Image (cartoon, rainbow over all chains, first blue to last red; front, side, top):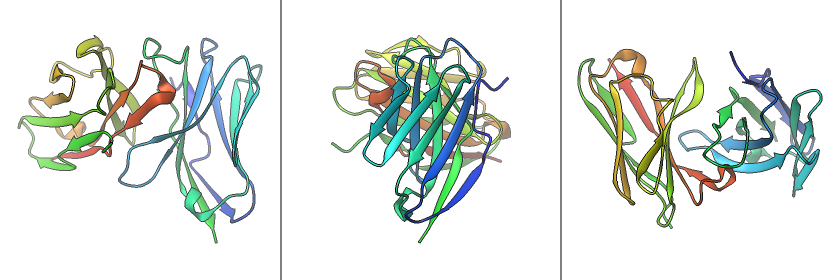
Length: 114
Length: 114
């Protein structure tokens, strides 16, 4: 049973527009969420995170929104740039430490067209 | 810092052979993680170490898989004997104090078992 789902395998956006990547989870014990970005032939890199005590966290062009009641989080990239083209993974855990298993979604491939 | 180093980057072997994947974590990081990425199961945590001691190996798929960390700067993941279904990309990651948001991934080893 997939506890973290990214239902859109791919997303195409025009440069300068907003990219919205979505993620749903089922485990109510999850209270810490992360987004990772992955380029081909590289490992994932941490992008942004959010704790369940917040509903929004912003870092430059990247904003993560958390809707606990819907068990849904989203990553907004504004404005989108061609260099943002990558696979984005959301991940969830019961805490921000290795003692709590980290579960990944299947990823969404973002393509930003110039 | 050079980041997390993994070798080899690509490995092609035949079914039944022993495979050893290597990882050098970032200096000073006290946590080391091994992940596997497949099309079917996505990115999943196999095992992690804290101060060279294996803490949680619940993600290790079978007894054919074993991991060691003889010192703070080196870890191995061994598959013996290898099977075609082990074909995947294996990532090593390291973290300071075990925080998921401080986890840095290596570039991965793409394993193909024929």
